[in-house]
Length: 249
Ligand SMILES: C[S@@+](CC[C@H](N)C(=O)[O-])C[C@H]1O[C@@H](n2cnc3c(N)ncnc32)[C@H](O)[C@@H]1O
Image 1 (cartoon, rainbow, N blue to C red):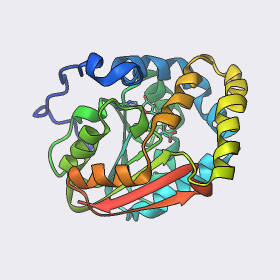
Image 2 (cartoon, rainbow, N blue to C red):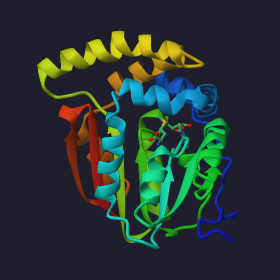
Image 3 (cartoon, rainbow, N blue to C red):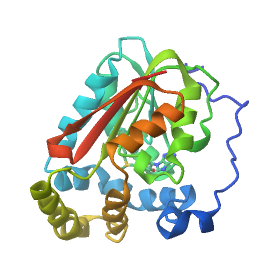
């Protein structure tokens, strides 16, 4: 049995969130809709991500892995792992990686490209694992897609061993005005052009909106603290286009 065996004690079928209360943007983040959207972009997800980020995503994934301090033999959960691009970098540390994602299409590509990694289809808001299973947990470019990120942070705390580590790597808005302008042009004008290469260009409109809507790093740190994480710090990468948060259980 894999060390990240799915527990039948947790309730995988959580009640749907009330979309009316969450507003239009949040309702677009309903897990079933998000899964469908990522299913549709899965075949070319990694190449489009490389183009949109000008290859910087590789650097960001390495920074996230370094911040996690995973040791050989550690059991690490990579939530919203998609096609396993972040999980593969993590696995190079010698840690055993469990890659969870809600999109069966993304997971199918991940299975094919990384047969040595354990992939699980599941919802981050109701993780199918027992309490205190993992030595470390991480989520890269995924928390922003979830309707209730605070609930996800609490779920991550539940499945992490005491003292275990959390790293969040997420797109963000740069704090400096000049960069903000360039960023605005990039995500508003250039990204939609690159997205035409995708199998579902319309889904990249959602990406732009979700970046603009995402709160600043202090709010994310407050959410993590409220969810039970301690010693939370953050660091901006590439002028704040991406922010890394880390903390301990
Ligand atoms: C932008 S991709 C990031 C994938 C990967 N972490 C990477 O670095 O390339 C976001 C992923 O979050 C997943 N996702 C969104 N909501 C989720 C949820 N509620 N539970 C699990 N995965 C979710 C999507 O299916 C998608 O694969």
